[in-house]
Image (tube, rainbow, N blue to C red; front, side, top):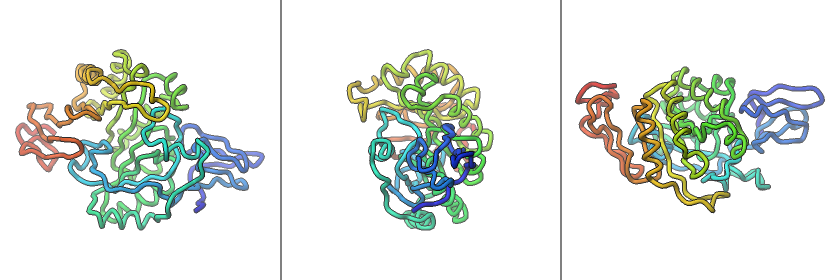
Length: 331
């Protein structure tokens, strides 16, 4: 289902320049962008994945992970194929890297109106654009998010953050929350492993926070790649500079895709990162892919506000529906 793309301009010689993600691809006639799902057809940039869904599930919002956004609720989660990164440790690589590994554009048709209808029918409070990179199915996400807001639903992105200012400005009216992967605090690692860059991701975190989008950040800790104390400290200090209330999810790596030769991250490494984040001034730090370290604790009085086991969340008597601690009033 071809659909004319958003955010691009014509160049000389039949080329087009995409302004959706930070690659800002210049695409010759008949060629694809780096994402593998946007194509220059006769001097027009089109998306090949509009309404072509590769995954749709009802998930706990905690699975995104979003811990401070509608806790305990469900999110109708959708994805198309494709990605603008090439992470060798991707856990959804069979769909995110499909075109990058020579596969065809796959997916079942599901129009934006149908996505919203299914979300409402399932009792979800939000729609999550997730599993692959929502930036590359931007037009589909944009139209769905707009309808969702009209029908009383919230929207969230689970994203690598490698998008342009123009893309964020375009969708921010309809986007309520985002969990942004901050994979490294090293530009060389981004270039070598993801084929991206660090600064655009940092810019996205700053910009979304400034625009009032609720931001949480996830770092998958990969042994030997981003597990040094220096990198943990630099990353945590950056987050504090944007907002000490930003939740930081420190997730345990397990071998996958091209990184099957590595061992899983030692829990002690995650705990070390958490201690560094706390000393830097972060108020909410969570450990991912491990059974402990997921409760929300009031920074004011230390009471447990939300208890978590796996992806389930239980609001305690100290959790106020106004988003405050019922014991001490901390927001």
